[in-house]
Image 1 (spheres, rainbow, N blue to C red):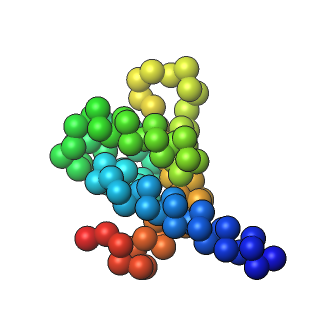
Image 2 (tube, helix red, strand yellow):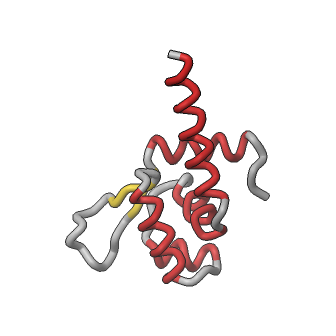
Image 3 (cartoon, rainbow, N blue to C red):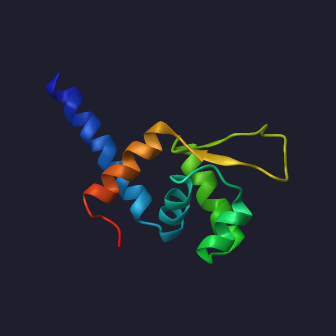
Length: 100
């Protein structure tokens, strides 16, 4: 039981470290915590390039922190949302003061 708790805590910190080590991943999660969005909207609101936003979305999706809310076959108008796990970790990042 103790080891399980330690593994969960380590997993959380691994995920948090992954998120905060990139201003792009941080920006994407910060935008999606307010509600679903499309990559071009995230890019325009953050002033970051669509290429970086798309790459950040892909890496966050691979770690189940964000999810595609439309069919993956859809090429335009892809809407992304934050997962419960992503929301939980984002709240922890904010409460720990890990971002500026």
